Every structure is written in C-alpha cells, then in structure tokens.
Amino acid sequence: MDLIGRLRKVFRNLPVDVLTRPAPSVDVLQLRGKEYLRRFFSPEGFTGVCALSSFIITILILFFLIQQSLPILQEMGYGQYALPLLSGLGYGDYAWILNNGNIVTGLINFVTGSTWYPKYLSFGILPLIAGTLVVVGGAMLIAVPIGIFSAIHLSEYCPLKIKNIIKPIIELLAGIPSVVYGFVGLIFLVPWLAGVFSLRSGQTALAGSIILSIMILPTIVTISEDAISAVPKEYKEASLALGATHFQTVWKVLLPAAISGITASIILAVGRALGETMAVLMVCGGVANMPPLSLQMFFTSVKPMTAAIAAEMGETAVGSVHYSALFGVGLVLFGITYLVNFIADLINSRFKKKFGRAR
Image 1 (cartoon, rainbow, N blue to C red):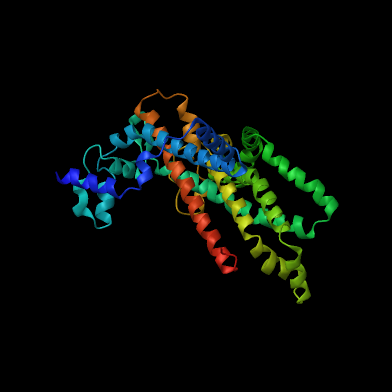
Image 2 (cartoon, rainbow, N blue to C red):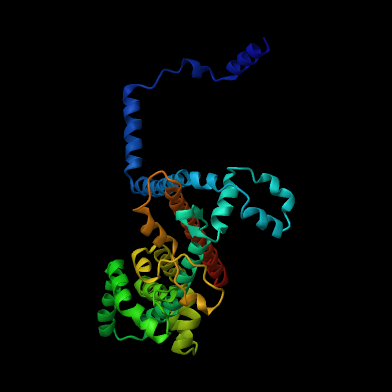
C-alpha cells in the first residue's frame, strides 16, 4: 500500500495536460527527423562525428590488442620476475596477490623479463623495449637539433629562391618508402660503420638511429618552419624596434611564440620513429640483446619492438602463445606511444604558461 500511495502522490503532482497530451503527429515527427538530419550534416555535427569516430577506432584497437594479449598475460601470471621486484621495493608482504594466471602479475613479468627467446617459451620483452628506446632516443638526439636549426634557417635566413628549391626536396624525403632507407643503410651505412669503429657487424643501434633521424627530419623541418613562419610579423618588428638583434629575436621571440608547432613536430616525429619497422629491421641486427648503460649501447645489435613483430608474425602459428606474445608487444608499444604523447602535451602546456599563452 505504501508503494501505491507514493505512485498516487507522484501522478497527483503532475501537470494536468501530461496525461491528456496527445501523441506527436506524423508531421511533427517528420520535422524533428529533418531537424536531427540538418544538425547531423551541419559542419558542427559532421566534425563531431569524425572526432567521435577517431576516438571509437582507437578504443576498438586497444580492446583488440588487450583481447589478443590476454593468453600470454595469463600464461606469465607467476612470480618469476614480480616476486624479486616486490621484495626489492620493500613490498614482499604483498606477494599473496601473485596467484597463478594473475593478469597484473603477467604484465609485470612480460615487461620486466630480460630474455626474449620464443623457441624456449621465454617472452620477456625488456630487451625489445630497451632496443626501441635506444634507437628512437638516438634518432631524436640527431634529428631534433638539425631539424629545428634547419627550420630556423629556412624561415629567417634563407633567400626565398633557394628556400623554394630546398623545402620541396626536404618534403620529398618523407615520401620515400622505408624499405628503400633500410636498403641504402644496409648497403652503404652498415659497412661504413663497421669500418670506422672496427666492429664485427655494422648492424647496430647507431645505424638504426641514423636511418631513423633521416626519415623523421622532413616532419620536424616542415612543421617547425611552418610554425615559425606563422608567427605574426608584428612580434619580430617590435623586437627589432626595441634594439634586439636578429638572432635574439629568433631565440627570445619567434621560438617561444612557435613552441606549440615545434612541439607538435617533435611528437609526430617520435610517433613515426616508434612505429617504423622495415628500416630498423634491416639495419639494427635483429638480436634481442640488452644494451649496456654506456655509449656502447649504440654499438650493440638490438631488436626493436616493431622489428620483432614484423620478423616473427609471419612464421608464428595463429592462436599460439608466441602469437599472443607478439600482440602483447604491440599493446606495450601502444602504451609507450600514449605515454610519450601525454608527456609531450604536459611539456607543451608548461611552455604555453611560461610564455603567457595558456588559455
């Protein structure tokens, strides 16, 4: 009775015309449908759908990687690597969470395992991660300074006639297939490195870094030059009017004003370097070594994560543990790419606040 009383009270407080209001006519429904279609096909609706679709596609890719990686994470859900790690961090009392098949534990073992030897079902990808970071880090050390200084020269110092010749040539480098870079590096760069540094094999992380730096240079140069050229001329004229030199104007005014575009170019370059496959597969040696923490790391043969996926996926049985492990490598690479973009976005926001451009 209490429930019936409450329902009566609710209906008693409703407006009188709610219960007697007629259903929408066909004409009204048609007008509403036309309005919804008009909103959907408007510029605002169309761009919103595109943005939503890109988000949905990214989430679907992530779910697919997780689904395909679950077998290897469950297989490695033991305390082989996680127990020593927890004990070393002082959390040995929490070892009870390391149950058989524990996915979190499997992920820890998978990422921190120091041996990648699929023949003996050893799937630790730490050497693959280290090889990727060494190759990409070396490429960025080479490409970022050269790319930014090249962009500054093209934007501020280079005569227009020469710029109109050089810039299209730089942009053409982005259209060369990666296998061509790998072939040129294998034929010319690898023997040259072996001779100069007296190495048994020139297929090293340094060869991969040099090839990757050439491949990502067009991205950094083109986007950074466009960002510097897009800075309003009033900024430059005001700085020169205050007595600053051309170099001081470039360093203190133009670069801070264009920092958002320059950061975007570096982010895109890192993404291109992390996802590159054929070139690093051909020139890095293809050996899952753990690089030493010294300059010798650049003279060691390594096997980046993308190279491992490309080299081993074709000869792996579908549904096997090795097959799932390669998807696990892709999942970790996805996470690294997201982390790099997140950190770059934080850096970009701090630069904007520093130079008074935060919204």
